Image 1 (tube, protein in one colour):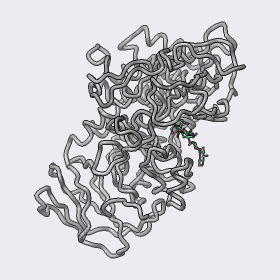
Image 2 (cartoon, protein in one colour):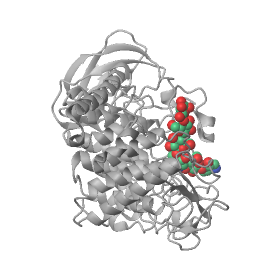
Image 3 (cartoon, helix red, strand yellow):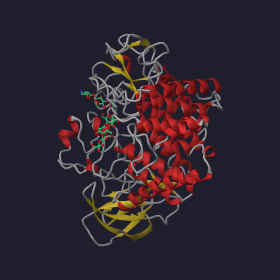
Image 4 (tube, helix red, strand yellow):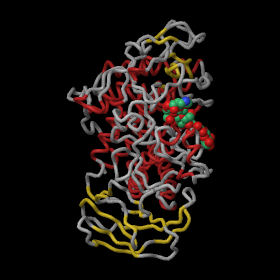
Length: 554
Ligand code: G3I
Ligand code: 9MR
């Protein structure tokens, strides 16, 4: 049947900042300028103007016109934009649009912790669940997990950390990226908001407590001294076979294995360990020292084993495969240099930020984002060059935001949307925000905010990709516990959880059945079985948490 994308006037369904850009997209075959009206919650017309005809938007295949109501600055709730008979979903205008999202997006992590009970007093009854993988039957992990048969002959306590996504695997490369993004969020905004987590109220900022839950796990994944490949880091720990849905972590009966070390995982730990050392120096000196020591050990081990690539994807876990570690060397070197100032790392910093941004697989751009946090390490000329590089990338993102029918910094060269495309949008918003920090240019901040508009409903499917935010939002994300659509006794995803988003690869059976021939920006379906368009993941929510915190603070 015909898919329902909601009203043709597409807005940020949560709202617009009083001082921010305010634009919308109108899906129409009309090609002449039309009158738009802004209605308040009493249905009174409070502003009017003319649309700007645009034409066909390539990624969506939609004919659209653009609406700019940025000159309206009064706050309130229940606004709607109308063109003729078409009326948008309601939205707010105000200064607090992102204040709850900022917090919810971070509480995603506590909800997905492995190794401790998730308690009702923090998350409410619906989201409470027993501890997963604490060595209690039927679980077979994670207190003593053996290596995959034939790969080594020890077991490690790799309990703790966050579950990757809708599955119960724990993977170092993207886990480290997610933890890094929370540490960078702290560098960006300071202590930030308080969270409903067990550590709240201790003297450490809550965002750092949350990151530490993962960092402790990442350090446990390092091969102990005295073993072959000592100092390298295991690529992942996950089930032997994929489990079905729904399934609570505590009910997972599968055998779990440590999968062999990889250079990429090792360098991710070197990078996040170095950042950890710098960030925690002020809060927990002993932990900071542990992080730095693990980072150095990892770096040295990776230098000795520079081309151990991710083992082929197992039958019970994601592959996170990557056959090029040069970008990870560069990022790790930059973080180690930023933290220690040791010039020996400098020659390994071989990458800079490009329009490709960054992802769990491509970390080269993170070298610049690392150095941006420690300007005192750089001579003035290098500091200026770095700012210029970041600004140049941001200029491209601004151009993408301005030139696409649904404002979006993401504009893949081949026109195809990848698995996790929403994280490419969100990470681009982070880069725009950092460009704003470095240059003070408001256009970058505005483009970062318009990226949020895309995620929260101003898009080709008229959906807010964040659970609990907007009128029509994703709520059947692929998750083994948040599986309400399979078992009404289970909850929907916790508010503030972002879906992977449109993926033109159609890499799961549900997408293949329902989305054949979709335009890239419409290759999304809010069904629990569509893991290639509708899963959640730690490295996507870390990006959302970062961008929402920036939006809230701006
Ligand atoms: O690098 C290529 C690029 O060169 C090419 O142009 C592009 C278009 O085809 O593809 C790029 O590779 C993609 C890769 O991600 C990097 O973006 C692959 O096609 C794509 O299949 C791959 O998807 C990953 C997916 O696992 C499958 O391996 C996602 O990034 C990753 O987020 C996802 O992670 C899963 C875990 O495996 C298991 N746990 C859940 C988690 C989230 O869904
Ligand atoms: O649930 C798994 C999800 O987290 C992964 O992203 C995805 C791709 O690796 O795989 C999912 O597991 C499915 C498996 O690949 C095939 N059998 C059904 C599993 C559950 O849908």
